[in-house]
Image (cartoon, rainbow, N blue to C red):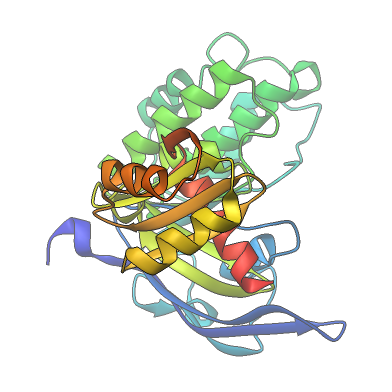
Length: 306
């Protein structure tokens, strides 16, 4: 089996309830080496809870979680496939330096060399402050130190929860490049976020989560499929336009949004739709192909779920 198809993470019917609410509701998926998977959803969808279950901070009440083929409940310090994570608001010993933290993170692993630590420091932009105490770090430097700690152990699975909250645009771009480099080396990267534009640029696969459930799982290629379009048509008579398009075009989904029609389907014949609307005395003011397919797809799913 090629490295790109090596299974890194398997969730099988994972379930957890707390306070009478299903926080993770029978979620299943298989993630592979080299993927950058975006775990997307509104607040309280269960994203952070699921990540904490993968890390064994919380236990699944039903189902199983496997990393590199081994159940997480049986994994030990020398199990195949290390796991690293960068969670929200990472904590530090403020009196220690950044380098002290990296040495502490690598202490259990005999194969991590000084050269590996140096390369991670360079990649994360911490070279000028790595010997300073963490108490003097900016929020961006503290976050990148957490990234460095995660990378230095050479993980097979890298988990990040809301990674862009503490970063400026330059930091976000740097982190994006780092994650793509890790995926190219065969690391399975899972990023939890509600910032759809960033997920669109970064991820090769998107899993959308709501109310603890996976409601969609698709590759970025499927979202960007040129044969499948989402078109906004601003018209003067939306109800009439809706009736015309619904009656004359098969394999399309039409929805009214104020004075616009949202038309979704494969191989949409936009010029023909325009001519048909005008012929049926509908005033057409604007036609635009949606430029953010993930955002449009996400909003459609949320409406359908409601």
